[in-house]
Length: 77
Image 1 (cartoon, one colour):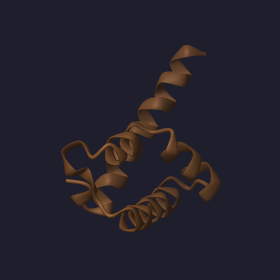
Image 2 (cartoon, rainbow, N blue to C red):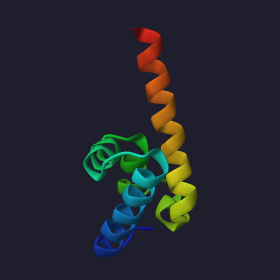
Image 3 (cartoon, helix red, strand yellow):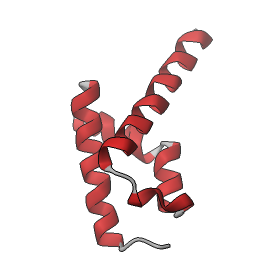
Image 4 (cartoon, rainbow, N blue to C red):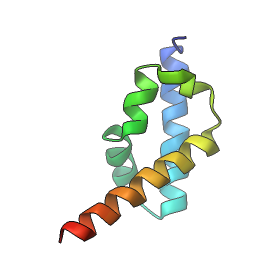
């Protein structure tokens, strides 16, 4: 199923805002992470109708990815 592009952009905005608040990031940092995330790629490609999931669920998924990336960076240092 393909989501309406306008509705999808609004969903992205809600996820980014919620992610920013929960992780205490600037909107710019949250936006940058989101557009480089696996979650964004999957939603934009229509994988498993992820766009139908709640904003809260998708934000929690993105937080997990964010923490995983930060842990990987710390390990590499």
